[in-house]
Length: 324
Image: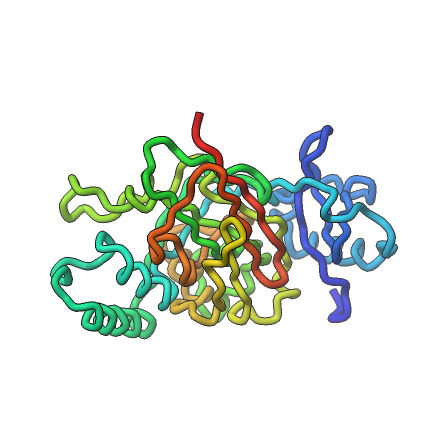
């Protein structure tokens, strides 16, 4: 694909005939089937290197007036990943904000520290983590995936549902025991993800030293809005220079840069691929920047509308509803 190729995103339309793969070029959406490409997004990812060339050629030949305006279509998640991995505590300001705002997030022995001492200790911990630590990764169920315009259902047994808008990385080539130096060659592209969290269920009070309960904290149905599209890696010049912005009911809470990420995408892929086989379509949620509800003592409630945008990757708009 030439360097002057037309930038595009890969999405999945949701209409009366069912899900259909589509290209997003500018503010226009083009169904792929009428262009002769009948594969789903997941099938395209299985043969990503050649599929990318074909999609680029199709995007290059599209008339400017073709397709449908983006605001007139409904998009679902680009695809349902086979595996979803999340990297926790990976933004410096985010973790410091959680520790300062939520006593449940503080390590043992720090209960009696002054706010100044607590912040200093948290900053020291984050600096050491960025230099020396492996990423802290956990699994989220693919069944939590919903589309960028779908409702987020707030479970009746969750007291503190919270948002975490993040940069998602979609794998495009099988990766096993890859190095950080070669990791990016295995990335198909990037997407907006919201790692919705049951903040009150992450740490159980009855489990002693067993650690976090990620099943209860992360994997409720609809707790992973994904999309609106997958933007190929070649069209994102610097994944560490993207703005992540999230608002609830029009009030902005997250407005940060991916530059605050402590352990980069390359190290995350290398770490994960040393433990599992990453396959095309797998999704890595790379961590949340500062601005979660827990940092402000605010949590999601029925009737709220979450709007999240990452520069160049599109916008999600998810209403919150109570569980029936």
